[in-house]
Image (cartoon, one colour):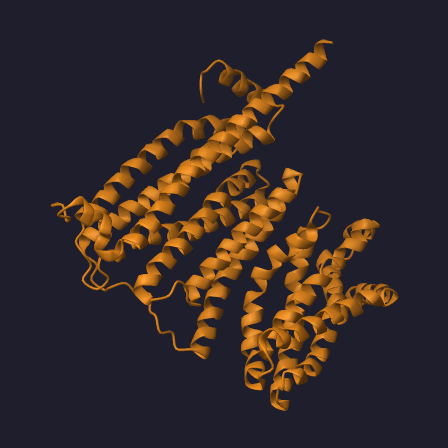
Length: 181
Length: 254
Length: 63
């Protein structure tokens, strides 16, 4: 059981490592979004400190969403997904493995990057710690919920926009609990 | 008991459901008009002024039914979706697809009338209250459902994908409601309470019930009408659709 | 069952809430008129299209 998950995860990670540009661009998106907010709102430290968790969470949410189509699309295109479905291993475990890999290359780096961006918002050390922990807990949920949206829109025209339409409303509880922490 | 079961499954095929729905639609439409006229007469003309909210309270005669319908239609949609996933019946996907636009419009109406009620009563068009936020998310879920179904060409797959989304949404709505509630109490004391004045006069209650019945009948009529169109489109090429089309040409409607 | 209003203009004014009340009921009425009309239109065009298709199919069979 664990074997199936680790095998799928290791495979997806290896594939992701061959395409590091994809990972890096998602992280850059996060950085840019988080940096745009102070420019739009103004440099008052008090205001920024108050807004920081919400801004960083929304940024992480959007960044995760950008990376969602990759979750199944490549495997769908070259037929690997069909083989995985036909494989004797239970499909649920395969999906868990893929979600885990997705989190490792998107959610985890985002959570680790967040405290650095939090410094831009003049957050205290305690607040930074809370933010990082909340992101570490919350991003797996984002990957998991996102997997539903990615699976439903697989191979559709305009799938990328559709994913955001489907997934963002479902992300709201995670956002509320995460940014509220 | 057994007899009944067979009967239900008989109407689960589009072929036999189509004429049945055709016969029912005029009745539901007529009932909607009757209930609507009665409810409007009682609510708008006869009912006295509310001593707290003045005449503005009359908005709730459409606001409350629209909100109820928006939530209830989603539940019905999810029910059809679950049925479709479990038994793979053709009809359930069509019903879910037929219900979605009406549900979305009801959610929109609920938000619209809520804003117009909130402005004079609370002095603001919108508050981030649990109910309002959940209603907004409900509208988003409807739009997502419609967009998802519209972008999938294969009707079977559209039904399945829509069904999964509807079921995920049904689990999500209570979570959203309670999380916003929790978030609100954490951030700001909820200065507005949505509880209606405790002693609602019998007359007002009656007019609201009549309006709710009107909305029910209207929704059923429109959804059935739309379901009939969807059936024709999906079953095109079959014998019974050809017969229906032929009858339509001779001016014999239904 | 007495009528609550003294005059029609009073009915329209809704005790100062006219804009809000009629704004709500107006949009509601609009939606409940437009939605059925659109459903009927959709059905009409669908029936016309299906008929065209079946006629075309019949012609193909004959030739």
